[in-house]
Length: 260
Image 1: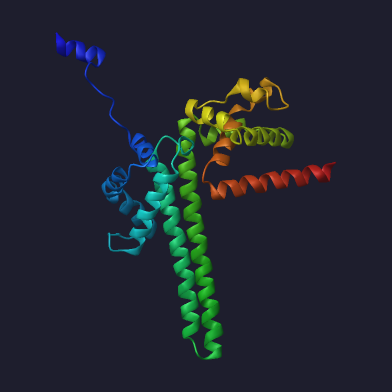
Image 2: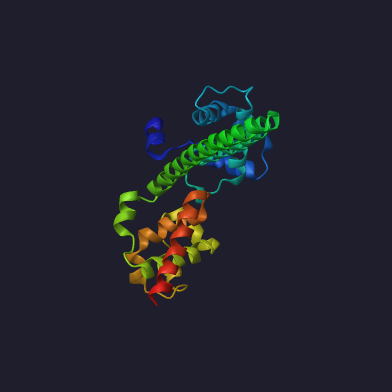
């Protein structure tokens, strides 16, 4: 009889701590758990670093050390507005830091190559060649980082029940409507309470938001998905998407000024 009751009512069972729960403990000062977690996820860190470097990475490599530091950074920075998965957030940070390291090393290598040249003609030729090589490499690195950022953004959108197809379909058609929606997103993320509601409940805090903006509830509801998508970008570590959003806003303001 007792086992049946245990199954029905979960008697005597405690909820297993999630990785995210453990991170909150670490942020509260549990250093021992922090060291344990970093050690436990070394294989995950090595895999993330290897995917950027396109080669097997072990614990003696400098890139692995960068990955360890980045994983620790992810633990310290993690919050619910980074998404429900620490590992997705950590993977983005690890790859970004390793890419930054590779970019820095490539610049240092170019300077060293230039300094080693003595003949002026060879120097000019080799220097141009090195710069072109680094520029091409930088483009590849930026492309890789942009791709990783978009993949991460997709995982966060999924938590809200959204896809890129949804955003394409629901994006306001007129620039004024888009600007209004972006302004609403800015107001939302600047209010800690509303922002917490958005990321905890995975929905807009309609009632509270309505009292802070100059548009009707109907308008907010009509642009709901777009406002959520923009709010996620404004709240997160999205270098490229934020630049894209900023560029789009500037472009639309310019077009509006020309037409007026």
